[in-house]
Every structure is written in structure tokens, then in C-alpha cells.
Length: 234
Image (tube, rainbow, N blue to C red):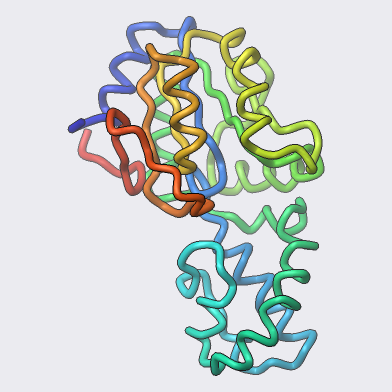
């Protein structure tokens, strides 16, 4: 579907404040690779693993820590030995405000969200992050220039407990989304979630972000377009 990003803006203008545009955060509006690289460098510093101290966001491709470890020059036997330890270290830090503050905007994301706001539509951030990550998320929004949640025009929906699966949360969130306004569009990188939005809100333009995902083998519905980022010619 060509020119999907301008189409969303056109529909949002038509509905004004009766409409709402929804964005996921991780790997949709925000690139969390800086967060991941920081964690791996700190792991390296703690364990005196010299090659990993040079880890940068561009070394990551997907969610496996083995990829950046290999790119940094560790031999496969050492990668296999260290990866479970690194994963445990990563898991203790990744889902915290202290680290998610390092995230950066995806290409064109800040500008595109501003254009959405200019249409008069409501803005919904719907994320699998839990409330303990709220402060770091807000600090990241401020630094990157995203609209701040105000519970009026801008809403941040976070899953209530860390233990809840993101799939379950995004089903539960649909009632709150519908209450906020008529959903004009939804953007998400996870095939399961964008497919679910299409089923729940058939009137909405659902757009898949072709960044990374949980690799569960779910195929994006053939009617849903994919984009790499939010850059386009107005």
C-alpha cells in the first residue's frame, strides 16, 4: 500500500479530536539498541572482557546477544559460555527506567508524531513496558522530543504488571483504546500485535514496522503494509 504514512495523516485530519493514532514504543517509535549496547558493555566491564567494551548499537541485529558478542570478536566457544551469563545480566537491567532512558527515536519518528499531533487527533502510546519503566520512558520522550502524556490528548498505556505477557496486555488494552477515540491507525513491530489490532479495529490503518520482533514465526497479515521507519516525502 503506497504512501501509507500520508494516508494516516489525511484520515486523522478528517476525524480531528474524535480520532486517535496508536504507536508501540520498543522497535516502533524507539530504538533500544543503545540500551542493549550499554548493558553488554557494563557486563564486559564487570567481567573484564576486553572485546565487548567496544560494543555499539550497530552491532545488534535482533534480540540475540550472541550476534554483538561475535561482532566484537569473541570466538564461538567463548560466546557460548558467556551468553547465558550475559543474558541474566541483561534481563536484570533491560526492563528498568535507569536503562530505557538511553533509547533513541527511530528515523523520522519524532517528526511524524508531531505531524499526527497537528491533525488534532489524540495520541496513544501502547507499550509492553510496565509502570516501573515510566520515569525513564518520560525522560526519553523529553530528550527525543516526543509529546509527553497528559491524559488528555496524549495517553501512555503500560501493562499493569511486568509478569503479564505483552500479547495478553494488548488484548486487554483494546477497551481503553476504543474509549479514547476512533482508532485511525496503529503502528507496531510485532506481527502478533499488529494482526490483533487489524482484527479488533477493522476501520483502522494498521502498519507494521519492519525492524525486529520476537521471531515466533507469526506472519504479518497480507493486507497490512510494512515500513522501515517514519521517513517519507510529504
